Image (cartoon, rainbow, N blue to C red):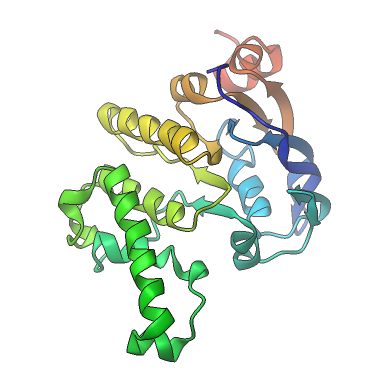
Length: 261
């Protein structure tokens, strides 16, 4: 994977702490993400991984610290503002519209890109019609890319879980994010579905040039597809480096794999 053209730091997380009442979910965590890399966040259950993603994409406001994206620093941003800046997200629990078709679900990811006013959209005239055509073209490209053409018109709720996760990825890609946050994209999948999802994540990274930050429990997957890995345990950072460096880190071995390994 070293042949990839990894660029400068695009996302810089500086000294982030997060408290809920008296409970510290995250304590003084810093790491960076470079353009075009696949950056994994790993750690045991309750380590603070999802809380970290929630801070990056504006769901939570950190108690301390700041996040810099493409040179712009923010500590108070809502999810829509973060999305407009170019950070997309998928969630652990699928938040798809189960009664809507695959294509309509992915189209919802284009909402941020729609410039024409509501009335023109409703009437589908002039610029709004041209915009809708352009948006549909983008969505059709994503559907082809994710190999779900056969299910374009199928209600998402009727699809097997692995394909629903693919639709979720498609909806996030429809936003054209520069950085894509994936929260356990392979949770609940069988081996074959995981292999497919790994391939799509690497293809998104290579073909779209999208920078990927992912949380994943499957260590085999993480070691295979990540350029660098940051390790959390009890809300603190205990490791950061290449997969090989992390694999050999004593603190990580103790926390993540148990000392018997």
